Image (cartoon, rainbow, N blue to C red):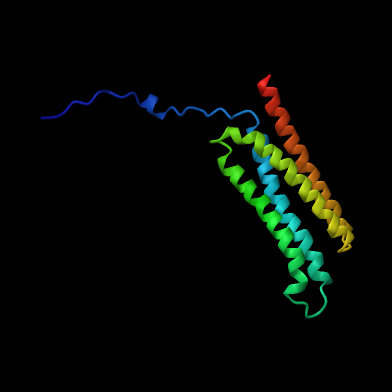
Length: 152
């Protein structure tokens, strides 16, 4: 005996509902990617002149005071960027605290440029880090303003 199945409209099965992006999602994702890139660039901008200026035979004690603080801060900033990127679609409640953390991260990245310019003597990387930090601050501020406009 053949079992009869109800007729299913194939068009209904194929229709995929378009997901509407949340307000501020694009800026939040841009901020997250900028935080990751800025953190990597901050570490490289510190490591390159430090290794170039290192005396011959310098050991771990020469590099550790620079690599440890820059490494920890930049790792945390990059980790926050990865975390925010992966959860940006599912958790729109993270946008406001993430934008504030982005502004703080941008300020830290901008301040990281000062020791590079003052103590390591590399003005180009100093200016680059200040500009990268300023750009991250601006993206975070724009993200907050986009969220404020939504609430009105």
